[in-house]
Image (cartoon, rainbow, N blue to C red; front, top):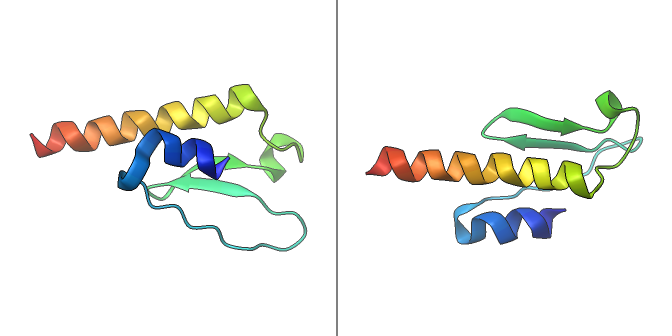
Length: 69
């Protein structure tokens, strides 16, 4: 999943992986939670869900670029 996010953002995306306990998996972008395994019935993100998160990252990067212009 991290490789999908890097593919979207390249060098403009900082990804931090923090070990959790008891199977915790959460994805945050700019402090906003995109995914929480616990909230999604303990399921790992499937391909459509990863694509959805990747789209959010793309939109956020686009907004940053637009703000810089």
